[in-house]
Length: 356
Image 1 (cartoon, rainbow, N blue to C red):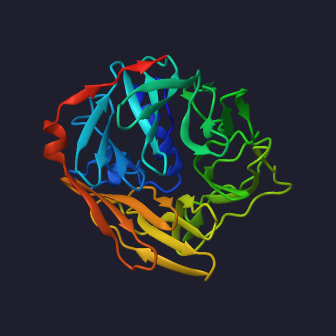
Image 2: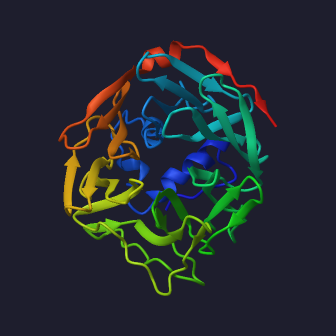
């Protein structure tokens, strides 16, 4: 099992959200082939995308703070963004590409801030701050923001973990409000489709086992779940019994997203007999009950993003990242941006001016 320990660097604690979601399926570190870039593999799961631009996580070395690369599809213009004394994580773009949300994790465990920026002017401000974790933020109706948060929890072994995760909502008029009381070891990948919310979850609370305990040896696994969501009241119906995971088939399924009308769901799946695990993109049309598997080259696919009925994902290679889209009705991915690592390393980073 992979834990978030106090002795880890600030970024390693943040990237632990990814690792925790895969903790029951990851091979041990000794199973990685020589030269395998685990840091790049971790970063490759993050993608924000819109119809006009995308954002990915970048850094040139493991000792460098995490930065964001904002890429415009039409012009090819790229902006590498940083904030001194912090890691920039978990980006999200509004569907029109005009607004970028991300998390600014302050070094020294000084808190995590949700930041909103205008992508044209790069004028930024802090939306709110959390003393614990804050991640997987997405915009929903009513200018509200859904996100996941956990307090820091010190276990009996003295290790600090972010292991009591629940879904929250931020309303600009009333502030933060907790929507669930699940206390899950891991929870992320929020996606709202009409009156339902999809998410990935792992590790139920002993006091309230709302999801099943995982079986790491099973050939068919899924961490994807769904609950009723009221978009007007911004409430989530609590399950009356243990939930059943969705899209269970050969392999391991996680990281869901969905179209607004709920007809299309995309997620990641890996085979269980590979090391390191290689995640491919799966697109499910729930209207026709059909499924499309898109094999991802390189190190695998990012968590997908759906805008209207088009599915965006990035693919991490040995020396580059491809940002791609699957247009409705097509069987293959179209590349929108080809970003080589050398150009990222050589680009100057812009220090963001973030208003409190």
